[in-house]
Image: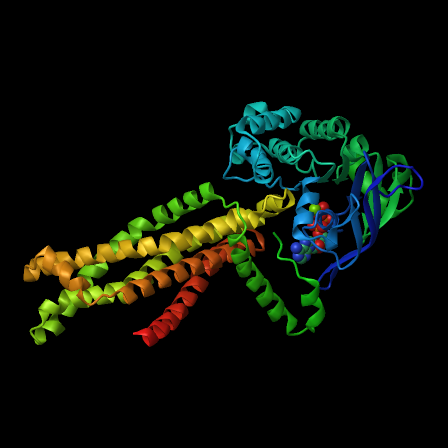
Length: 254
Length: 264
Ligand SMILES: Nc1ncnc2c1ncn2[C@@H]1O[C@H](COP(=O)(O)OP(=O)(O)OP(=O)(O)O)[C@@H](O)[C@H]1O
Ligand SMILES: [Mg+2]
């Protein structure tokens, strides 16, 4: 178990000198990032800086060219298939576009990862756990609907519920509030905070939405040109003369 | 599921030609994975049955019609040349050979490549571009086993059955034509039709059907899993699934006919 020298807490995600290119497109150019247990880290940055790529590397969907990613003490790149699966059960991933299985109803969507991974669970147990997370995202009434019949915000919440059902230790949110109206965004923000409190998970939250960043983030990380430019609390990050950071702020609030 | 590039693949191959070999190796691993999963229970029997049902429902109307018409037309067109020798009584056995040895497996496979291949390619392609396959992957839900293994197995299992069904329908069409012209009885027709068919023919046809089924399912799943570029990519995946499968089916047909020839 790795311990953070400054905070004294356990480090659940430790990223060192991470590089990733697609052909000549050098997306990540030496990213360093640590996430402590029980901490919400918000990653900010313009479109195309590689935020989604970063969290896809964390859960092993993509592999880095260089650098190391240690998640819950495991080096993601060098895990065998079985070990990676075991790790993935502990890491929830909420997709930018929700990625719900559109041939299944909401309850089947949520039951799917449970039934694929815990074959010994009885029907009643599965139902209980599905209802539990549906309750947490307050969408019990949508149990039998299909994803096509849900709004964007509801889809996001079901997507989050589907990852919560596996009781992860870490949550990775890819733009949880993108494309939602302010009220739905507030609901999602509250959801993220209550997940942190109730389930005790550590999270990385990717967003362009500064309200979301302010409300949910214990710490903010600003990415530009494939590296972390600045990190700290909301106040610390935006108390800056860097043009790019200022314009980011002004775009949202003025 | 991203088919990741392994270290070896990166290390041993210089740039330039590496693109080809890396993708060949990825394709090989995708296919080979099926045989690994074959020895790794549990199997998704419920899902396999569902897919079998879909393969059957998708293709049944079309192969019924095609089989029937081929039976009639083939009989009708062959009659003049046989009657020149006064040998129209050979019609049933000629048809039997043509249908069992060549037509039924090939026609069934081509139709299924069109119907089943495109539907699998489009379905998995759409799942891929909307990140549903990645979502299965990150929740450790083993998308290969759930999506690919079940579909390919369903195709492998259904193709021989559909092939036998096509043969049956084609013979039926042929019988109706022969009956109206030569007034042959059903018993004579059947006896003649199966006269020249031996066990080797049946085996060869079943093997062909199994190989074709595997090809259709595997190509469609591969094209679906490797879909890129949004909705446009989905159309391309469906299309490529059909075209590639058809090419491969013809090549395999040639090879199997050649090999079976050595055993005759
Ligand atoms: N699978 C891939 N193949 C090739 N290039 C990719 C791939 N995934 C991402 N990229 C490239 O990496 C860059 C970063 O993409 P990414 O999706 O991480 O951006 P992002 O920071 O999440 O942006 P947004 O805020 O719009 O979601 C883009 O230029 C994109 O073209
Ligand atoms: Mg993104």
